[in-house]
Image (cartoon, rainbow, N blue to C red):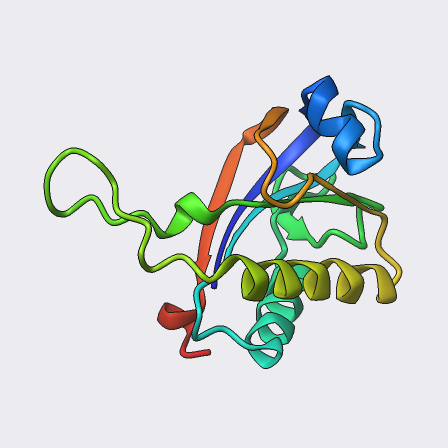
Length: 159
């Protein structure tokens, strides 16, 4: 599982009117003020336990500035929100040729179930969570603070 975590002043996800009609949503599917924009990639070896460990680590990251400008505060301490966006391209393999391969990305049904699990897990812990639409072509815009961007990979963390 891979998370690309960005500290943001604000972030927003929109989809086309056609996709919004099909999904039963408006064209803006998620919008937050201060918090984290998290791009989430899932592969087939990921489990709910992997998701739990990744979420636990993400929510405890002290990546927001305190009154002295030091990164000492976590998401709860700043009253931040989450914008979670599925992103299968985080598993792109570009080692051969010029066209990325996505064979390491998770099966869509498996990935969607874990993406929903992550969303529900964050909400159950009291966080305000907004999302994109799984599998949709999305436009993601944000104002990155810092800029501050981290990559968490469950394999590198031993999860």
